[in-house]
Length: 199
Image (cartoon, rainbow, N blue to C red; front, side, top):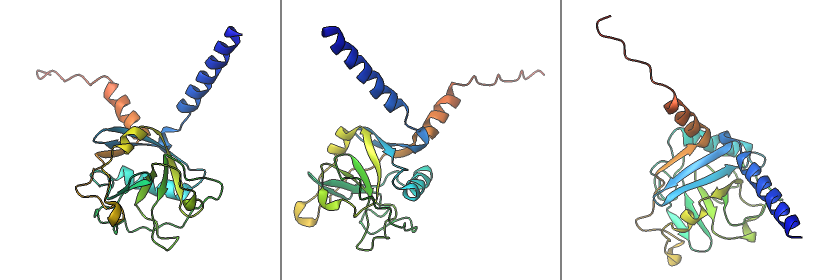
């Protein structure tokens, strides 16, 4: 019985490790906060257009230095506004890609919007906890797979002022994992030898 239990644990661990390694680095985002790195797996199966725009903005450095301007304890943390006011964006609104089958649970990453379903742009939010009232009403485009403890550390806002944060925490840098891997691989390549000046 003990041997069977160990075998089951080994198979489960191997399967989970394989699933984690199977993520496509082109669809994984590294969000570096002052406390550590948050890894977000993009859900291209749910929101391909949103994921494409998000990656484009990430690669342009759009999110670097932006703040989490609205953070409500036990609910969510919202950022991605270059003005830090909650009214800014990239100028490229998206059509809604709502999914009735996905639930708003801890670690879900979704697009913020106004009352217009097609008004999402660059602002996004990360869920601290489940919120069934949001199901099917906002575009889910990602899931935090590592580093949720760093999201939990974000400075919380004033509950009497819709979660507005004074001196909010910033995103240090956001990158597509494939770009970081490529840069790391390039750094490991041998450097060309300097030519002899006498030649």
